[in-house]
Image (cartoon, rainbow, N blue to C red; front, side):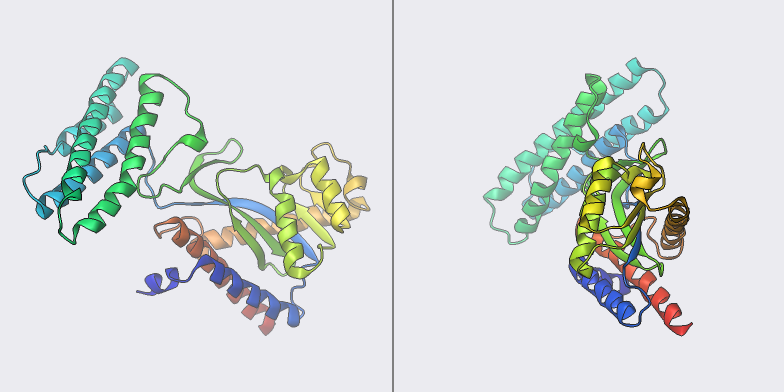
Amino acid sequence: MLQKTISAIRPETWEEINRALLLSARQARLEDGSVVRLDSTVTAAPIHEPSDSSLLWDAVRVMVRLLKRADTLVGGLAWRDHCRAAKKRARKIQFTRGRPNRVQLYRELIAIARTTLAYLDQASESLAVATNPRIAPWQIEARHYRPLIERVITQSERRVLTGETVPAGEKLVSLFESHADIIVKGSRDVEYGHKLNLTAGRSGMILDLVVEAGNPADSDRLLPMLKRHIAFYGNAPRQAAADGGFATRNNLVAAKTWGVHDMAFHKKAGLRIEDMVKSNWVYRKLRNFRAGIEAGISCLKRAYGLARCTWRGLDHFKSYVWSSVVAYNLVLLTRLKST
């Protein structure tokens, strides 16, 4: 019940709550936003490790569930339950070696999914002429899942049957959390969820947060984050430090133009220290200061649940992330005021 109540608060409202905390910190002279550090991380969506076979099995399972409900609403529908056959082939694919054998199993699994999808279309036509008031919610759910199921079948055919490489932006990794993105940071493991860009202050409080769509490069997100900071505080930070992924010549020039006196990147990326900051000593200080945001992100993930969202839907995902940040900032602000 507590989670249901918290998730009912919109992410925009959580953002305003966080800004109220930041205003309180500013009035108490605990955080003025003059020195900031930026970094990105990933929060996982509540989904299992995706594969073509598991997605096809999920698709058949969802369609059979809808068909059973449709049968209870109108009765007399002509369809067959292929759930066991789909599950059997999905399991076989996991333990079968050799591409020819796996491709044959995929052909059978895709055929089952296509057949079940045809049953679902027939059921939709039959229910369209019925007058039962309980049909409307069924139709809404069927219209929601049908294009997603079609995407799953199509991408499986492209990837497995034709050997085509499907771009990450076109892939669907979950029927139930269709908003989840494929995130690859460097050469590390692939994660499924959303990329977060965070701005933290000298106090350690999280000053700003953006839940990104897709997997934008860090270098493309520095200036938008600085713009958001300027819009809230009224001026650019005097000093800023960011991870090496944010470093480009254009970003440095723009930040300096907007009023950032010292803009230090963790990795120089071809930039000279004297172009970024006024001395080597300042560069070392800002570089070490930037490393502190890693501890904040680690605390958010370990103690405040930011590693993995447990709520369903994109809006609830954003609310979950913001509620974690607000809880973190509230505890930190209380500690700062008590010292």
